Image 1 (cartoon, rainbow, N blue to C red):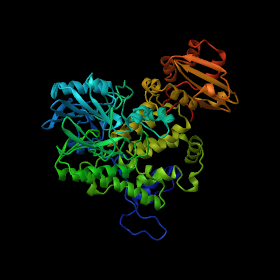
Image 2: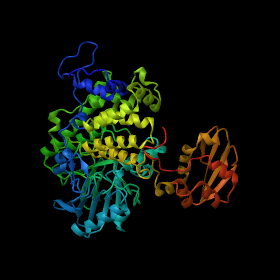
Image 3: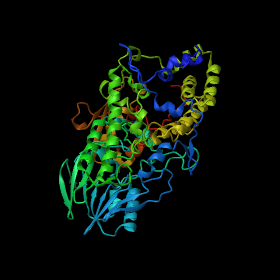
Image 4: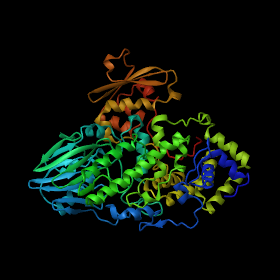
Length: 626
């Protein structure tokens, strides 16, 4: 590769590093032995394959108008229960005698018919799912009562009540399932539960909840969910820990604990049928990190769960949580499991190897590309998540955000740094011209770097916002992974003005608040605004129906007080309200003034509660300066 002159491009490459390192890698020849003291050669990253200097590639246009990179979907389609377009109606398909799986729906349940009733595995994400699944079972399978409902993991345990519709079924789950469901937000069970608003906002983007149904930005069928709908969850009545066995109407079932995208996943082994039902073997390499955020997903846990399935040597494998069609035959199942094991292990091991060689975690994505021998397998695809978004989560689990390089400890605020680099590059017009040229040349990663620099300078500038939106939309349309596409398209729409939809912050649903109003009061402490609170002090007590809790405000901190009657300081004000009204306040549906007014209008209560932010949706790309 020829050396480039020192121009605007090289100045900004030095500033942001990302594209600069990519250009450096293009000049490296794989296979050479590194000299002592120098980093080993690395291969070109997969993201350049689609996003930059790729003039011959054209994204696909789906029947609903969505523009997307459908390449890996085509690879995965024969193994997935949805078509990515939405043309497959949900139906119960027979697997073998007495066993069905609902197809046309990504996480449709498995149904096993027994002499006295039905065993159903997975209930759906909300009451609508449960109602739909029951209607399909009644239409396509049997009118027998459901005698056992099994939660294979917490994500799809919220359709139970409408699925059962009065059937007196045993509800089986892992011992941690009830706790995880009650603590979780929109599929998220974080280490820090107070972060649920941020993580739930990202989950809505991840699953394209608010993307349109048609047009260039339309959602992809099968990987989209409408999050936050009414839950129909019911607590488990029978708990199965790792290795435990139960017999249901003559059918023996053994449960094995699997830690996957949920910590309560159960792999279910039916020895009489030589069949496994699981949330482990997905028809794509599973997300070893998820862009929406959640607990750390240890690839070794997922690999161990895959090995368990492989070593059971089943003749039938049904991936109820991962959206796959049935797999048949020992060899076929072993081959698929090994492919996913090896792809996961490759990413994990190389992330560790390169970190130990001194590569910053933010740069790992530029050094790791799966071998062609792995990519040949249809289960090793990026139809859902993309490999280049996972590696840095591995070292971050142990060493956190810091790379070990001193220059990463402190930095100028982004806006200040952008001002200085743009001045060095010759001013905003020069950068704008370069960004437009990069878009015309389909150098979308480079165009994004330039456009985001201009946005940092002036977030309200409509020209800069649209330029950045155009670069994001192009990156989304070129992304093979549905999750990455959703984040890029949501960002573009936010820049174009959809401030009421595409946000990074959500709020827990009403069920979550009402389930434990004292927990919700505790979470209010993270809304205390120090600019308002200053050095004020006071204890604000909440009496919500028959439950009491308080917040002791002092030094711009709010301490949660679970038992106000035992606190050393008496309350300075009391808000008496119902769980319904408090829930509306927590969710931003009732203002501070309205909540205080219905409680009697105490001015001191109004003053203390007024120190807390009211919930409001914040756009991803605000017009306000960062």
